[in-house]
Image (cartoon, rainbow, N blue to C red):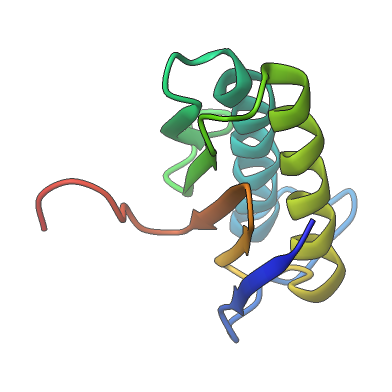
Length: 118
């Protein structure tokens, strides 16, 4: 699959293992939004999904978006999103937001809402 664009926010959240902190809450929210993107996007009629996620009632929220080209069947969409997610986390480790666009799919997460009215 052809990489068309990769953008990483230069701001990162520290990774603290076994520490309950705001950074850990955001990491949890990012993991949750990716679980939702990976399971929901291939099942949607137009192969796109946008949502937000927080953990443990935290105020730290991750917003995410997944999209696949309509020519893909759900299994191909899943494969494409997995590749995009891998590329994203290989380069944008612990970034507070990032986006990867492949020829047939794209995936994005941020710490702010990026769809809808301003």
